[in-house]
Length: 93
Image 1 (tube, rainbow, N blue to C red):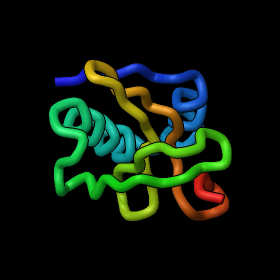
Image 2: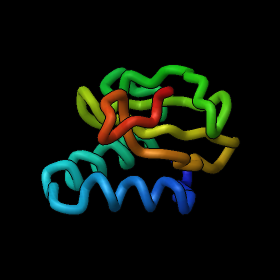
Image 3: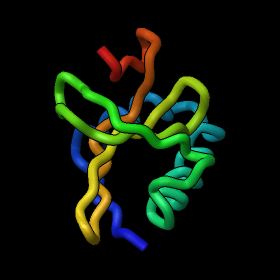
Image 4: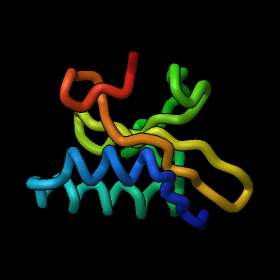
């Protein structure tokens, strides 16, 4: 099991997008637990991506429109960003 590190950017985007959405908070907590247990679990639909802010990173699905962007080492998973494709949640460029 990996340990999770939350970057300030992740915390900011997560708080902004889940502010009034308790269901999204619950789903995100479940996804982060799965990520810590097995980052490449089929249910997370993890894949490599290139982000203009973070460069090469990994992306895992929280909901159909929301993703967690992260990177990892042997012991740590670093959560970089929280968002997706649409204007409101845009992380992909």
